[in-house]
Image (tube, rainbow, N blue to C red; front, side, top):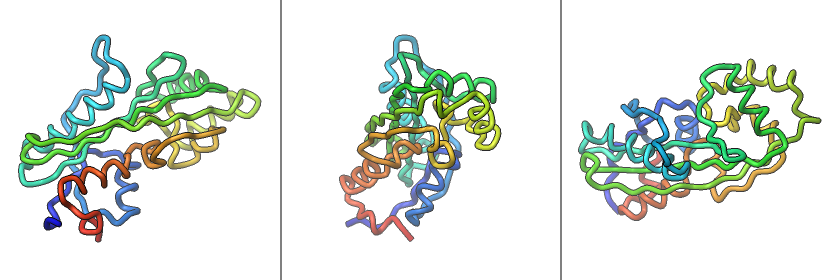
Amino acid sequence: MKDKPEIILASTSHARIEILKKINFNFVTRPPNVIEKQLKGEKPENMSLRLSREKSISVAINNPNSIVIGSDQVAVCRGKVLSKPLTEENAIKQLSWQIGNKTEFYTGIAISRNGGKNIKSAVVKSYVEFLDKKHLSNDFLSSYVKKSSPLNCAGSAKFEGIGISLVKRVSSEDPNALMGLPVIKLFGFFNEWGYSPLSLVN
């Protein structure tokens, strides 16, 4: 196995940072220079993959000796893409839209090296079935949004915190994907590049 490289997480997401910290991952963070916008006719799955790759490459260009991790998440419910709400009002609207329904979360993951010339990427799909209106009243949603402040979370559900209380059922091949970072895929990519997962943690 190869010696440990510098690992950069191209993100300022608290959830993604905490996921890597919990497994004692050795990394630094850099903010990506990417506009998170859906292209005309772009499928949600393709959007999450593209943005993950763009985030990784945008940081890798200036850090050619590092391996850069990029990730992005897109939520879709009843045919509607639910992006980051940014305001409490939008967050409540998004959650109301999802009550009693199933939302698909597409979480993209990409790692790049050599200034972005070499890249691996994938998308992990998760399903979340939300509780019905009997359990999620307007007052409950309003209180949740104020306490949790999920304004930068796709779909307005902060699953790494109290947002999990909104949920009836979850299905995913990687539980970390729902919180924004598919760690199983990530370690798989490192293995393919010859880096032992044990060499990447403190």
